[in-house]
Amino acid sequence: MLSKHGSLESAILSTLWDLEKDGIMTNTVKDVYDILAKNNTEKRAYTTIKTVMDRLFEKNVLLRYKQGKKFFYRTAFSNDEVVINSLQEIANRYCNGSLSQVSKILNTIDNDRLVSV
Image (cartoon, rainbow, N blue to C red):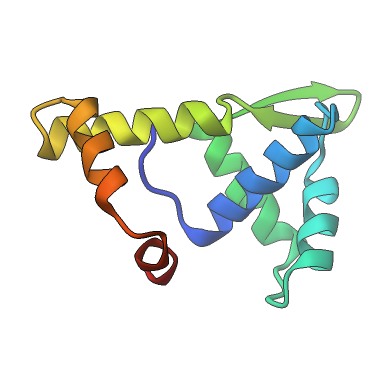
């Protein structure tokens, strides 16, 4: 599925997840651009946001459909699904596929250490 995202990809996904959590399921590049521009100190061009969203669509991470002349986007996977699949990839790579071993390791990590990583 997916295991690595660039910081802009992650910001776009988080923005869409937040919108979808609020019941807004049809979002344009402009919707995402406006929210990112308002919430982030790092300014990105509209065309950059559009390019990254199109790439996320090509990676099957976003769904896209056209209505009239506009494209609308939504996430193909929930945030929870992405986390679970990413943890499964880690389990497969480092723990012989055992999610319970990953869980045990996570339970031993101090929250202060997680924040500083």
